[in-house]
Length: 222
Image 1 (cartoon, rainbow, N blue to C red):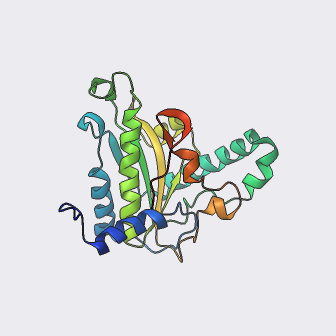
Image 2: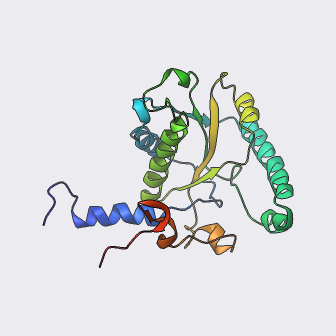
């Protein structure tokens, strides 16, 4: 039966293709991003769902070269601390490329706005729904960029309080991502960490339960 609300087949295929081919990019070309293009990505992010319509996301564009270098130095120091915390996998981790802060055309800090405690709708028992909402915004940004052939890398190796201070963010705000955005020579054919054998994507049978946690769901017949 035809669903009158569905897109045409080409549009449906394009949505799933963007989801399937989205990559967390680390390698960038130095070419600048068209400002109108960047504005479209941020508009896509701002169209994300948010609990209680709080829209907790804020985007800080880093155009100061010295500030970008300070952010990179902090991330690089955190990279070493992360390696130390990984124990026997530290050497393996240090061989990975985990960011493209100095190479990307645009660097954005994504943060949660201050004063979020006043938003109670949907957050009374789950206050971290502000983070969930902002994550949806980042995914929107990511998919829009992928559809237009632009790479995005989410960097999370940082101390939020340190980045908040570096960027002059107010008390109560919280940075959650450094987004490296830029042109790329090519998109990775598979997630980089999978290609590097750091880990692999779980089978659907491992992540879908039915009625009780840990009880595998019956898959619908083809």
